[in-house]
Image 1 (cartoon, helix red, strand yellow):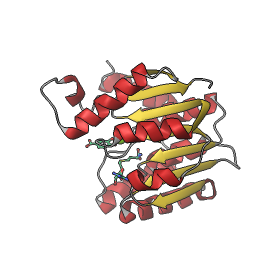
Image 2 (cartoon, rainbow, N blue to C red):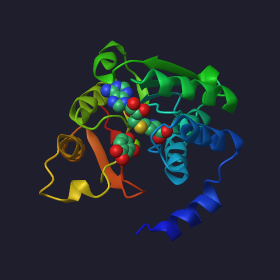
Image 3 (cartoon, rainbow, N blue to C red):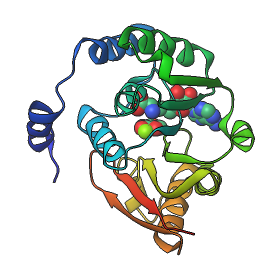
Length: 211
Ligand code: SAH
Ligand code: DHB
Ligand code: MG
């Protein structure tokens, strides 16, 4: 659990894709971008979580083709802001087209560059940070996300299970270890209340405590 049938049930009821979301996914395929965007049910979960806190200013690390960005931007008010960082210019260009087609480009600021270098120049407060890029630096992304989040803000981290590799104690890959450390930091940090929602590849969800 969840399996393909429960995923499909959730998607059919709550997360049916409209034309701009479908177009964003089809653009991935056409341009040969890796098919590692969030699923519709995970996109819907991000949307509901952001709505629940009235998020206005969100940071995403890992834009890819903009699929998750559309879900996130749609959760924001018209004067809200998504800042999203992407290292690969071709991914960022695809995302820019998908954001324009979805009518959310005015709410999105795209930063093209390496997140490990660009995060330091960002200033708090953000209402939520979605960490969904390379996995080895996830402990660094954790520290930067906690610096940037306001009290009551949401820490969101994709790929908590990394296709089951996180659960295999013999797998000591640097990417897997980065994800494990991210989860352990989230679990043990006295300034965060967190868990893993077992949606698809696992989503770390945490709320930053008041100072
Ligand atoms: N959030 C997207 C999926 C992101 S996939 C969605 O659900 O639609 C991960 C992305 O992170 C890829 O596009 C990859 O190029 C980018 N990435 C990997 N390492 C990065 C880094 N150090 N800085 C910025 N982007 C990075
Ligand atoms: C992979 C999947 C992801 O969702 C991601 O953010 C990065 C990598 C993967 O399957 O390799
Ligand atoms: Mg991911």
